[in-house]
Amino acid sequence: MKKLVLLSTCLLLLGGCLQQEEAVTDQLVGPLDTVSAVTLYGSDSRRIIDEVFAAVSDIDMRMSAISQDSELARISAGAGGPVAVSSDVFALVEEALAISAETNGAFDPTIRPVATLWDLGSGNERIPSDNEIAEAMSKIGYARVTLDKTTRGVSLDSLGMALDLGGIAKGYACDTAVAILKKNGARRGIIDLGGNIYAYGTKLGGKPWVVGVRTPIPGENGYFCTLNVSDKAVVTSGAYERFFEKDGRRYHHIFDPSTGRPADNGLLSVTIVASSATVADALSTACFVMGAERGRAFLAERRDAEGIFVTEGMDVLLSPGLLGQVEIADGRFRLAGEK
Ligand code: ADP
Ligand code: MG
Image 1: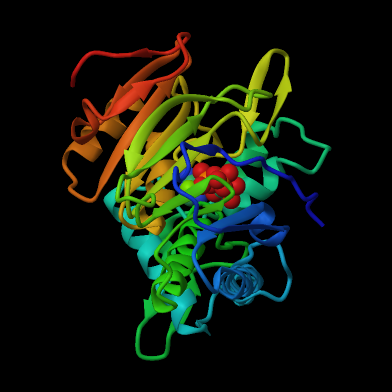
Image 2 (image 1 turned 180 degrees about the vertical axis):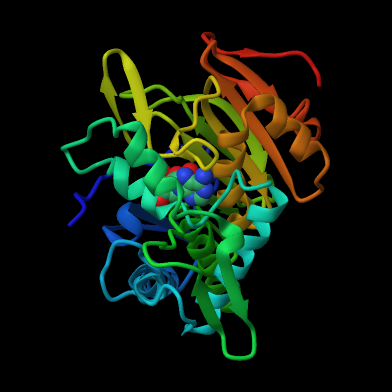
């Protein structure tokens, strides 16, 4: 069993409500291999949070790449023939594959054989040989997944292939939580599923929430910049939480599907701001793989997502739509010039 890694939240919520309004906060530890925290204001919060946590646990059970009896594991075990899955698993695999195509394979939910090979978080990490990497690479490729809408069938084209929704499932769970808040008439709150933040509604009085983006340096828990958001997801992918070090190099858990190795583009983190947490999650992983230059060019072409890229040199680069909206809060980081 993969060791449970406890993450502190990647983003911090700042400047809460000034006026008094009762808040309920709770955490769920474990599902989605992370810590899920929800804060809600107003009546009925306790029951709504319970409903959110039940949904997060259910998504974890069905979409986990690790658990042997998840729907995802059934797809992987059935490589070669179609496996019928529930409608939301089907829809999420479909969305993941669409984003794979849009990102030219920087996001790839068939990355599992590569991720298993590196086995980050196992405690026995080592650098695989070139042959092992080539072997794992022969088992990935998003274009090798076939979907059949009428039967909700998912097929992988050869044995040894496996799906991994780890780069998108927390975002999906976050959107599911938002839907539960809306359905129950919740007015304001913050959802944080392992760094997949959704700022729901506004602060009391109508002002946007102020979200701090986690300093992307191992062992540090502060924030390096802030931005104001309302009804938006803010999702970060980075090289500072799940990694091991060998001979002075850091090997982390976001893999470049074109090399089979941890993405190595000189980035510390990428944060995506979008209305959809699912899109934000997948694109934060994809943009981390693409690097700052390609990632920003990619985002400049889209209307549904903006991004904050932090380089190893502590430069902070923004996609065009965020210019003027991000405030640096830590003098070690510099906002780079306009794109
Ligand atoms: P986190 O899950 O730590 O918030 P990400 O959203 O970036 O970070 O997702 C990383 C996870 O996604 C990895 O643990 C792995 O399961 C999976 N993954 C790694 N590389 C890729 C990739 N290039 N495309 C899609 N999924 C990936
Ligand atoms: Mg992601």
